[in-house]
Amino acid sequence: MTRTVSVIGAGIGAQHLTGYAALPDDYRIHSICDLDAERGQAAADAHDGCRYIQDFKDVLADPDVDIVDICLPPHLHFSAIMEALDAGKIVVCEKPLVASLAEVDQLAEKVAQTDGIVAPVFQYRYGLGTAQLLALIEAGLAGKCYAGTLETHWDRDAAYYAIPWRGTWKGERGGALLGHAIHIHDLLPWLLAPVAQVFADTATRVNDIEVEDCAALSLRMGDGALITSSVTLGSAGNTSRMRLNFEGFTVESDHAPYSLAAKPWHFTARAPTTQAQIDDVLADVTEAKTGFVGMFEALADALDGNGGREVTLEDGRRSLEFVTAVYASAKANAPVTLPLGRDHPMYGGWVPEG
Image (tube, rainbow, N blue to C red; front, side, top):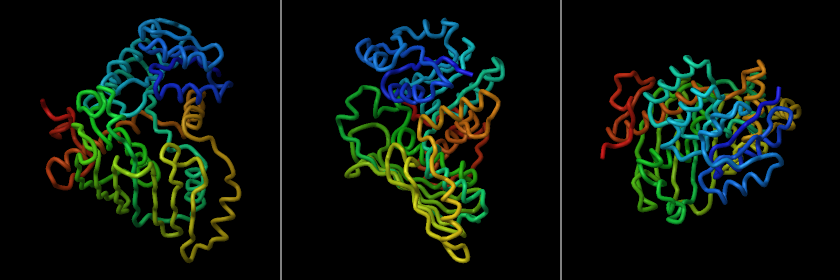
């Protein structure tokens, strides 16, 4: 079934449009909505049949729009999602989904009331590299994960933070942990198990901003794996990397910062698993849709009743629970165990008062 989609926000939203355009059997681009007429019209002009609309309410009132894809600044996400659900739209929303566990639980209540759907954006899950790893896990060659490392080493200078809402608690709701490393951290519970404990330290060392731009995390996963994560926006260049040590092999991801799984990953056998066994499985994994295209294809499959690969609201909540625990740990300088209850001091949000 083909569904019509309107993208709200022509920044990263322009890339979303390209993702939908690559799946013409699943989606028809209806419009791009942005307050900046020049930017919005330029994004619309790049796709046949796409109109430019300036007022979000006009999108919500249009019965031809099935899906609203929200690519607004983070502080606008919650209200925009709630309005879209009330209007009967399927909702896709960029990270961070909202700014607290309390807000995501309110979204869940609204979804139940409206029989709606909210799909958070975690495009790192989709691509050849992750397809290879999943195939090896399914083939029984991985075994348990012992330990691993993550790196989100990106370069963001003062020019990046010239946009007024960036770098502020009010506008961004968080720093590198919320806006940059959130994607690679999403891979851990998806591939391994939920995070059971986090011990985090954060700092603002690179730019003159309110939120963190460096972090060091020590994680214990629910399956016992020990993971460290290093985050900085003060790197010479942009690199994302994941290295996991399983019983049967060690895997290292590609290092592309925005499409970690687009290219093949490197797998090295660990006895008694042989490299030939690994290579035999990988020989059958030759292609996979990457990034936004892969995510939107999985969403279309789920909407057509063939779910299993889509990102769910529960995934979004798990990500925000992890972020909450990280900020709580950094504030207390102590480990924090998960899951978090509604009585947790940061259930209502981690943004500092004042």
